[in-house]
Length: 225
Image (tube, rainbow, N blue to C red; front, side):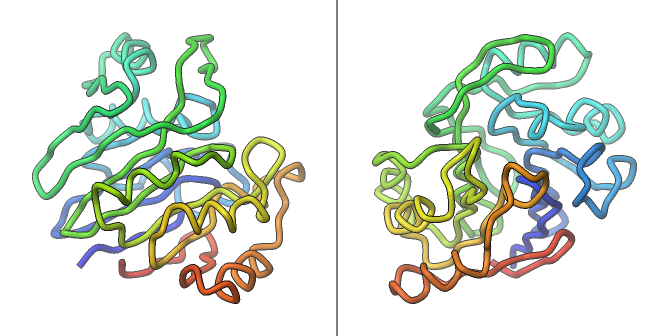
């Protein structure tokens, strides 16, 4: 069994068999977060990209827990200077760990860390506990979102719907169609005024079109994948 807990914005915690994977841990300064960076568990931290609302508390959590951080090479290089363990993937690269694997795939977005490191953002295809989850990261709608399901049967996709900095909820319906996962959870919305979105309308549009089941999670809400 794999459990997914939504932590607000694009942060999620995946747990299976005692292994905790933390994705895009933006908690401090996140008005929707209900868990602190001082308490969230992590055996491995994965980043889609290095914008502040995704990189978040990765360094502090890695230092506290000893968890390695998986990130694209340029971001990983910056984080290594903080004295933490990193896995420096590039797009298409896969990191294997006990209980699963994670692959970095393309996203259509921009990338600059708070410290000024330019990089290419990505999405993450994560396998844990026999379940495969596609976290699209921050992305616009583009046709290559259909590619991960050509290689791996997806169980769930995390799709941004907030607009302004990513695709909006209307483009996200088409993204759900391309991704072809049977179950979708919307992310990256309502944290701040520019990305307010109607998640209920997104759910209705996707389900009325027969594309996928949609679960709208409040921060700290969990589902079994």
